[in-house]
Image (tube, rainbow, N blue to C red; front, side, top):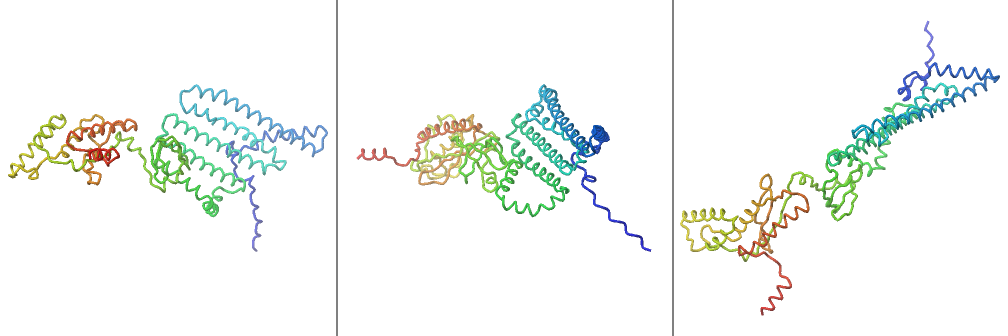
Length: 452
């Protein structure tokens, strides 16, 4: 004979099998014997007053609820008083910055809100008899999630404050990382709240978010791209607060004042402020001058246009005159001996300058620029490019380019050094029987007319 099939096991109720957040906080002794005995004593006392069973139950429930509410309110005040008088006072006496930041952002004040929650969870049997636990328990769990979220936000703000206090905001994008952390924690909190409301596992809930996330990505495409770009900018250290950046597509050139997950605030050198989406730094090219600032050198790249008609060979009288320029004496002694030896070795007829090797006034001037800058105290001599060269001749003359680096990269000081160098070089041009090219002006026309 076939054994009878056992009846199906009824599905477990969430209250009997699931472990709630509040139970994790205070353990599994929620329905303690003390609470049960207290409720029973209230019920029997009310019945002893001559009340019927129904009214006795109502009175016992009302008194137990009132007692729990009073205890929760008192515990809340006691917890805040304890934190304010003892914890905050102790932390303020400490010299550490983190202790002061914890007090300023009231992290422990947020934790004190868990005390009433623990008391309510402990007294849950007083409410289960009246059929309210089905909504009160999830409400407590959601409140716990909310409190923990605020505590986490406070800790992130403490970290951000410490970064700013120690002057590390130029190296650590604290604001962007803090915002990213808050967004991630908020997402986790939303998932936990929904899992509590629907009595499902967070993993089950996440598995069903695929289609919803696809729709959200289409709707909030720009916001999501900006968020992702902001995270990339922060984590890859592409830009820091204080960096000088140039964004040609936006016409922005200035110092970074603030970096958030979606925007970057830049103060231009004319004191205007530009708000640039972080996404622009990912999709468009930009220049970050941080490496220049950290290198200790700043480039001078400027040319002097020499009038080609003034370029000529130099003779012995010119060379003797140039020898009086202190920085050129050694160079001229060496080159004169070298040129004379080469011409003699090859039997060159030196009666004509075009024969053999000869020096020119522009060549000597170029050597003078190099010698002058080599003894300049504000110009890097090693570790940086040091170059004096000709560029291609143009209708505006022959450019002689100065390509060197100053050892002071501060803007004002750099401009002063550059101006001093070219003031001297421009004034020295006529000493070599050269002329700087300059387009004709109205004064030139007047001089021509007066000569007629």
